[in-house]
Picture 1 (tube, rainbow, N blue to C red):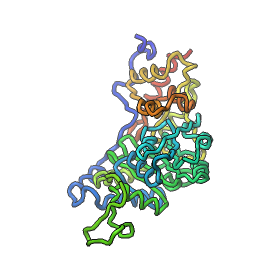
Picture 2: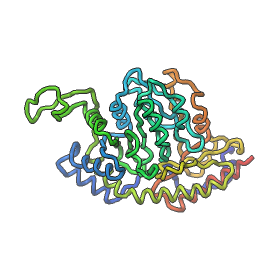
Picture 3: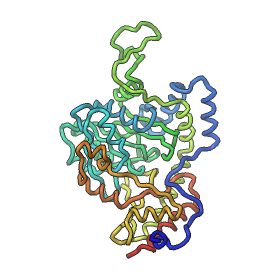
Picture 4: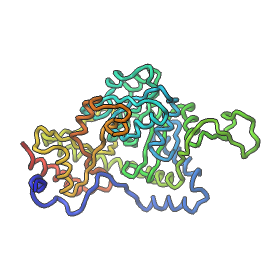
Length: 397
């Protein structure tokens, strides 16, 4: 009965809308099918094609395709030399992988607070948290908006640390006129189905450093090399290879690479539609006092992966949980990105406590992710706006 009181009548939609969804067309199916009947299902020419496409798109000198965004972060940390006793600074408003990559290397995650308006990691907080133990900074382009790369690069390099840009959300975004992927020491991408471009799964690391590139390639494939310049002994013959480091099997299949290559051909139309939807949401929600619209820095030309609705609970009779449930009753299935990483039980058991990043924690209690993907129709978008407006009007103080 309470839910009906909040929503006030029949739902705005008869069918459900989800916060994210992939878009697959005939060209994508054809690209995958061609690989399935080819000679290579993995370690083949589509990997090289994808890496070359990513370099052309971003302007980065090197790209290393891998199995997913998490593996991309892991090998980036390995390439940065992260090890036991080191620290890695990141944001708590992210998927756990942005911090877990430090733990995989035996290092310690350190959490810096966010900017309350952009929701990205705050360079001032990073500067406060950095120490002589800091080996890397993982700065997450939350929702697709680029982090403040120039200040973060300055802080990182002054302290002899590596800046890893977690671009899982931001393929297609530009910072200060340069594409994400070409600015930070390393940039990681994810090709999960809800991202702007998908391969089902898949990831990549981009860099301008030949030294980092060589390490990334090595750690992606067991630490094994066939390149004689990296071998410690004379070759026994054309079959010969050596394991010279402890790496992982983080290779991508040609099946995934073919799909991502085909998806990249549609990136421009994906960008255009996402920007149209974001502009319409911003226009509508900027007029509602009970809602805060995410701010963007002028340097970021953003291709948005997520659209964050942030409510002002003090102006409403309901909290975020009730708002979320009311959206579900309207057949608008939202999500929340993200639970602060150090709130998870695993991190609690490591000794992390609430209160480390108060701005991030406050954001978590007030936000949810609205539907945002290429295939949303104009009517779908208006239905989302109608649902939000309806709930606010029925719960104003």
